[in-house]
Length: 151
Image (cartoon, rainbow, N blue to C red; front, side, top):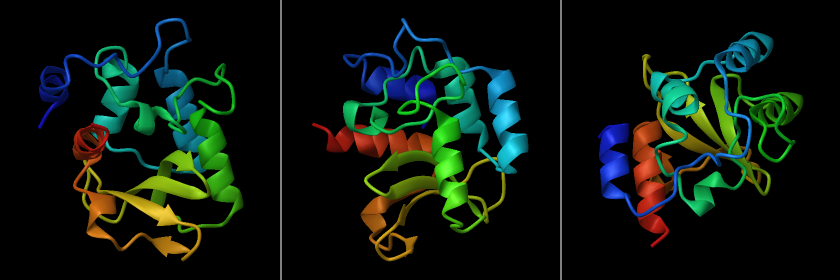
C-alpha cells in the first residue's frame, strides 16, 4: 500500500495536517534525529514532509501524534514525545511518534531499513504490547488499519 492508495481509499476524509498550522519541516526533523539519536522510516519522513497535507490520518491517530515543527504547541510537537520517551529511559531501539495515556506508538528499529514495524510500548507492562492487533507491518499499514478501526 502507498500514500496514494490511502488517499484513494479514504478520499472522504480530511488531510492529516491542518492548513492553518506551520507545516512540519526537514530542518526541524533533522535536528530531532540528531538530538535524540533516533531513526524514522522513509514513509514517516515522507508523510511529515510531503504527504501530511494530502493524506488523512483519522481523528484517533491524530490525537497525540508528533509533528516535526518546533513552533507547534506541546500537544502536537514531535520533540515533546521524543523528550518524554527519552526521559523515561525506555528501550533505545524504539523511536516514538505518538503518545497517548502513558503509552507510546513507536518504530521498532531492530528490523532492516528503510521501513520499520510500528508497535505500542505499553507503560503498564513496561514492554511492547503483545496483542497482534497492536502491531503493524509499517507506518502506512498503521495509518490504514487505524483508519479502518475508526468506522
